[in-house]
Image 1 (cartoon, rainbow, N blue to C red):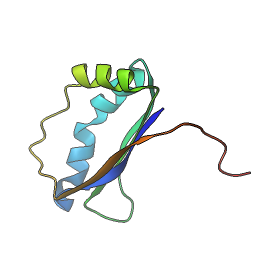
Image 2 (cartoon, helix red, strand yellow):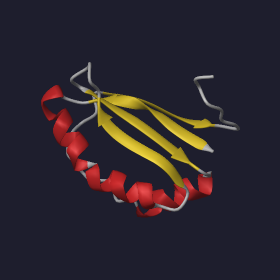
Image 3 (cartoon, helix red, strand yellow):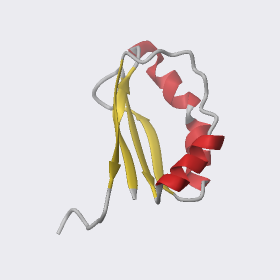
Image 4 (cartoon, rainbow, N blue to C red):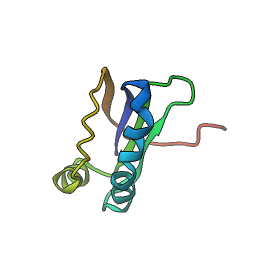
Length: 96
């Protein structure tokens, strides 16, 4: 399993526009073969932060999605990017 997680910083005035522009992308990604979860969300505390979280069954699933994803060109510049891809080998309930 692969996990992509982190956040980007954008102009706070345009953050909600950025998130809204990705609604269709999130909807389509969640239906893609091998997608376990995708979320692009506005942070509730930092007005310029957009949180990104994805889980994919495999690199092949992720690569296939990226080949057809067609992310929107919002024209909104990133002020910073803090997103990483992690290899996960197992999972367990976090609360006992």
